[in-house]
Amino acid sequence: MLANLFLHYAFDRWMQREFPTIPFERYADDAICHCVSKEQALELRQALERRFAECQLQLHPQKTKVVYCKDANRPGDYPERSFDFLGYTFRSRVAIGRNHKRFVSVIPAVSDKAAKRMRLEVRRWRLHLRSDLDLEEIAKWVRPALVGWVRYYGRFYPSRLREGLRTIDAFIVRWVSRKYKRFRGHTLAAWEWLRSLRRRNPKLFAHWTIGRAAG
Image (cartoon, one colour):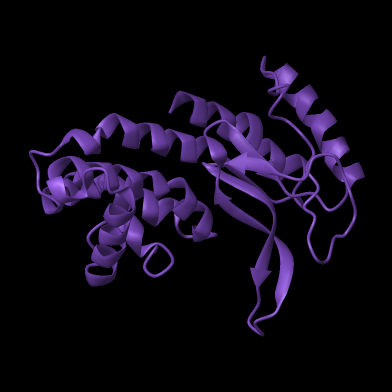
């Protein structure tokens, strides 16, 4: 809270006063400034370095960078073409417009770091060892975390989130292989059982709804 209060005056109010034409977003100590040219971005960076030095602060040497948002309307080139913000990676991706034609646009998707954190959390659940639980009980147990991830990260480019959470299905397959003798040593049959279950009960696990009810 103190950092937010400090940066409200050191950054937010200063930006509004000194660079009123440059829109920006800030969350805690992370910020994005939208410049119209490389020259404006470099000028702003130098001004921010001076401003932060006056406030006894320093821009993060690795995180602070000028990024070129390459898309269908900006075909130029620049070394930095992506950035992370609030668990998302913003970069050029293929999108489908209202006319169903493909085009390139800068679109956010769950970042690699966020996806890795989710996978580590899933591993900590050790679902495959919970043969004492029914699958419905497991789904209820993990539902709060999955619903949170789907609602937050599934709003943009949900296919990336599906890839990140695919490990959950792998643990479910390991779980059914341990719980039921008929699936032991029959991994392909276990996967087919899971696909059949998903068709019958697509809302059992929240990540199965990605792309249909991510919001």
